Image (cartoon, rainbow, N blue to C red; front, side, top):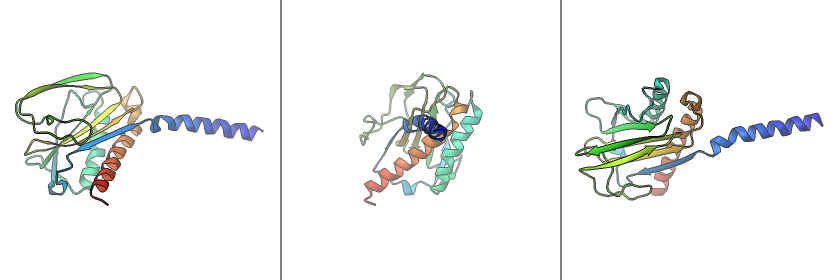
Length: 190
């Protein structure tokens, strides 16, 4: 009987430990008309206001290394001078808002939203984005055309301290990549 009780307790603990991972949600949107094979190089764009660089430099490095792993595995090389794409991430250990005014450059098309709603590029405008605690967003855009190519979001990274949420961050980035690959394969009929 003690053995059965121990098994039930351990099963309950394992179920509770797995619950946060199962609750993680991933959203991916990308320009389905983009020819991703033509992109050969990338460069980072640091966003001190929405990255974890200042408060958690170790986590910032971990996130970038994880994303770079997939970029390099996909055949891209880092080129700080003349990249084909630019990459950034947004994350927060607290709820914060970012106000972005763009007169020329990186911004989202008029129809940007979840789903295949890509519209013409906005040349001038302002937008407010709220980054909620426990959310990681990866943005990739064409460096020459200054058009959004990809946005991957993972919601429900657990832990008040990003250092404690490292596994959730790793898992979330992996899920974003897997989701993107599945979407592209389905789109291409593979």
